[in-house]
Length: 311
Image (tube, rainbow, N blue to C red; front, side):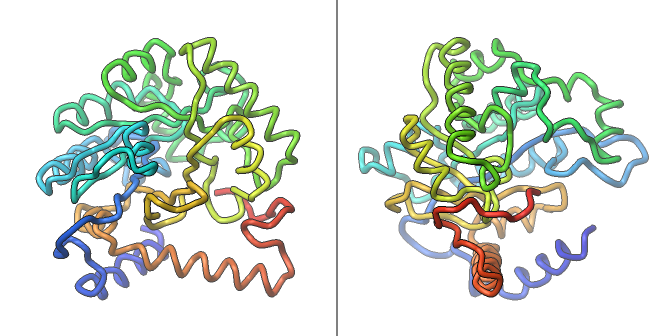
């Protein structure tokens, strides 16, 4: 296990009683969970691909959502709540998947249906169109071994599968066409990427996307230049991978998500769900702002693209 993960687990456990929100009455800011892959373990392997969970982990997490009385939302329902058009239950949650690999359909979706949990897909249209997307071209050793063991799960979703999931209640959003860090792109490049993906959406699904999840999603990958261009293209809500949760009424319509990793045991998942990790995200953002100030870099919402590395 990575040292940073171990330290975060220890720190969040130590302050859990002070940070937990599950003992408070009234409406809780909905957590937005961010998954990528649900992949089986390989026999004899101790390492899972990055940004994945096992089917056993995912089932336990979806079971916990149901047992704790969470009501899962679609992106449309989340948007209606943000605009004041829908009342939220005390415990609401948005469950999202990024990229668009076949395990989302064949592994994650049946488990989610078993527990009455709605899934929401942020798809990279270049991936589904079988184009060369650099972000997915290089596997880490664990990913390469998983791809060799379970090649069918490393295929992109088909558009028929996406349509079936949407017909079954899944929400749909856009995760860019080329999965590039938009903090390193010009406004013209962002506009071109968005136009390409929107055209694919219209051709394949007969509609335009309204919800956008930034590739990489960390501080520096979603500058104001990008949200301005994407708003002009018709997008109304934006999602990052900044650890924490964002009140629905925020004026920017820019929402944090809580990434779920293979290192998250059920206790860690519960703490993420109920706010135990939110302060970690605030510390990370403060550290980035302090570093940017010292180095003279533009702020997160500055007019020049940020230059932090992707992850």
